[in-house]
Image (cartoon, rainbow, N blue to C red; front, side, top):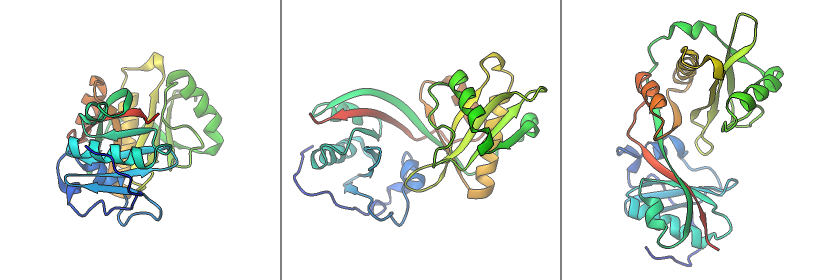
Length: 253
C-alpha cells in the first residue's frame, strides 16, 4: 500500500461489478447509483471506497489489501476528514501497519429480499409517532442504552412498538435508512429487560422486515459478529449471512 498526494476524486463505484460478488452487498445496497452530488469515492483494482463526509466514516468493499490501500490513500488525502472506517475482514490489521487503528469490531451486514414467516405476535405491533418520542427515548435509555438510532433521527422512516395489557411499551424498533443510498435499515430493536426470551423482539423484527420488504423490496441490518442469539433469529427470518466486515477508528496524527 502506498499513499498518494493526489486530490480526492469521485470514482465510479460500480465500474468493476463488485456489487454482484458475494461479500459486497454493502456496496449493492448501501451506495446510491448514480452517486449523490458531492460524494467522494475511490476505486482500485478489486475494491472501492466511499465517504460519509458528515460522520467522517469511510466505507469499503472488495479484496482486503486493496480496500486497506484505498482507506490509507483516503486518510492521507483527507487527514482531518476520516475518523473511522468499515471494510472487509483484515482491513484493520493491514491498515494498522501504517496508521493507528483503534477499537476494531467485527460486524456482519445482513439483508433479505423476502418476507419472513409470519410470527404469531406480529398482531401486537403498532406504529409509533412523534408524540411517542419521549416514551421511546425513556424506554431505550433504560433497556438499550447503546442504541444506534434515537427518536427524532432524520434517517428514521418509522418507529414501531409492542405494548402490554396495561399499555406500557415492552418492545420497540426503528426502520431507518442507509445514508448514501436510502435503503431501509432496521435499527434500535429493544425489548424490556424483564421480558426477554418471550419472542417480543422476534415479533417486532419480523414485522419490521415485512414492512420494509413490501415497500422497498429489501431490508438490511447490522449484526455484531459474535451475537449468537441475534444470528439465529436473523437466519430464521431469512437474512443472508455472507457479508462480514470490520469497523474501527483511525488516526493520522
